[in-house]
Amino acid sequence: MGYDENQLWQDYKKNHNSESREKIILHYVPLVRYVAGRFAPGLKGYFEFDDLVSAGIHGLINAVERFNPDLGFKFETYAISRIKGSIVDWLRSLNWVPHSTLKKAQELEDVMWKLEQQLGRAPSDKEVADYMGLGLDEYQQLLQQTAPITLISLDDLQCSAGDDGNSNLLFQELIPDPNAVNPELSLEYREIKETLVDAIRRLPERESLVITLYYYEGLTLKEIGQILEVSESRVSQLHTKAVLRLRGKLSRKKKELIV
Image (tube, rainbow, N blue to C red; front, side, top):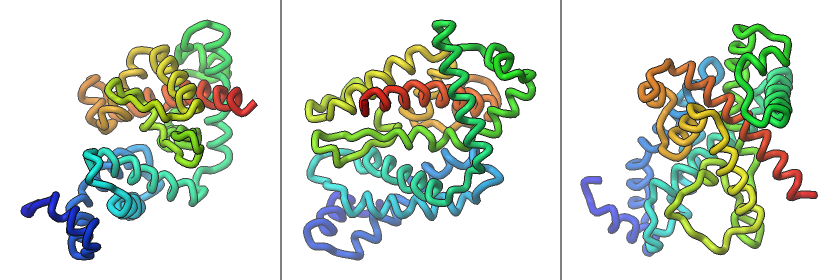
C-alpha cells in the first residue's frame, strides 16, 4: 500500500478512523475490477464493464466493514466472494434475462439431465442436439444465447453454511478446498458439497477443468482459453454446458433435502 496495511486495519477497526477505511477501499478497487472482468465476457451486449464495477464496489465496502483482520484470514479471499455476490445480486435485481432465454436454459438443463440418466454418462453435443431436434450449429447458437445466465444461475442454489441456517454460501464457496475443515457446517451444506464434488468428477474432462480453473483458481475465460489452446467463446460454451449439468444435479439434490 505504500504504508502499513496492518496498521490501517487496526486504526479503522479499533479507532473507527474513516480516513483509514477510505484508503483500504481505494487500495482494493482493482480487486473489484478483477472480479467484474470475469463476468464481462459473458455479458457483452448486455452491460458496460463500469456498471459491473459499480455493483461490485458495494460488495467491497461491505467486505471492508465486516472483515475481522484478527482472525488471520486473507482479506482478498474474503472480499472476492462478497464482491461477486454483490454483482450477482445487482444482476438478479434487474430481471434482465428474457423469459424465453430462461426457458431455453431450463430446457437444456432438463435434456442434459434426462440423457445422462439414460446413458449413464454425460451426453455429447450431438446427442443433446439430436434429442432437441437441432443441428449442431443451432445447438452451438443455443449455448451462446444461454451463456450469460450460467454466469449467475448456480448462485440461485445457495445453501445454509451454519447450523443456525442464517448464513448462505455462493457457488464458488462450495468448490472443494482440500485444506478447509469446518465441523460446524450444516448438514445441507455437507450434502450439497458432496453432490457437487461427485458432479464435477463426472463432468467431461475439459468441462471439469474449466469449472475448476474458473471458480477455484480464479482464472478468466480468456486465460483458460490460452491454457486449453481454444478460443474464449469455446471456453464459454464449455462453461455453459458444465454449469447446466451441475445445476441439474444440484437443483434436484436441493429438492430432495427440502422433501
